[in-house]
Length: 126
Image (cartoon, rainbow, N blue to C red):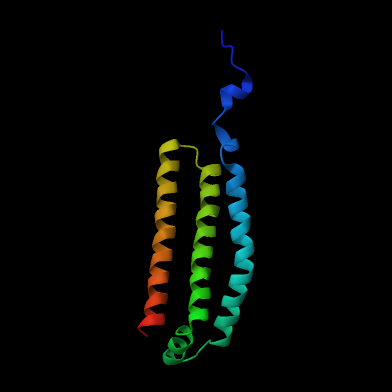
């Protein structure tokens, strides 16, 4: 006979473990993406068709380079969180879920790393 309460039986399991923190991170990156991606789209439209030398000159500006770096970081973090939710909700095999979550994180880090490398190389080297 089990004398534990229902709460004790489920403690540490399921969405009650860290769902609220995950929810707020998703919302925080969504709000930051509104402002960052608005800047980025305006930037892309303003310099569409510009020669490479002009783009390099613009990205030498520290403010533009930093905001573009924030765009990359926020967008890839938001992408990783969103895909994690989809994987957790729709993949039911535990081995497949773990593998896909690992690949999701690896992909997001690879995209962010390559993007930041390219941005920093243009911003500092030209």
